[in-house]
Amino acid sequence: MVQVDISQLTLECNAWREKLRQYKEEFARDETKLQETVRQALSKDQLQEVEHLHNQFHIQLINIHDLKQSIKTHDRKMQFEKVAFNGFVNEDRLARHEELLGEYQQLEQTLLELRDEFNQYLKRTQ
Image (tube, rainbow, N blue to C red):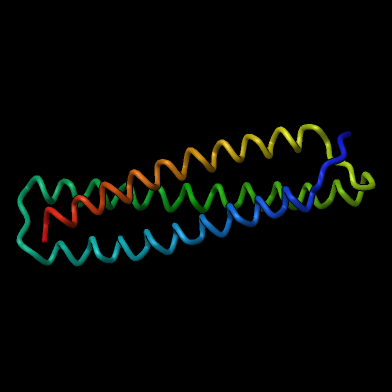
């Protein structure tokens, strides 16, 4: 058992979940914008790009949901351990926190790349 500032870890979890919630809202809006571009006459290549972006939005929205749920579960387990073990958490919980940080950073990088790809698409179709 290790004693750590669980409140700090919880704050990190909450910050990650809030940022993921913001990305979810952003990509839901972007998906609507993408659908609006289909109303224009598009080339075959542009239609393929629309399909690709639509698929990516769908996949990344699922990834956002899954990671948010993992973070929520992790936070609940930390809260349980804090009470059950008098302020201590299992070392595995700290390792899991670091894993989730890595997953969050990787997903955020992917989301930023998708945002950039979508913005480039919008510039080309306007």
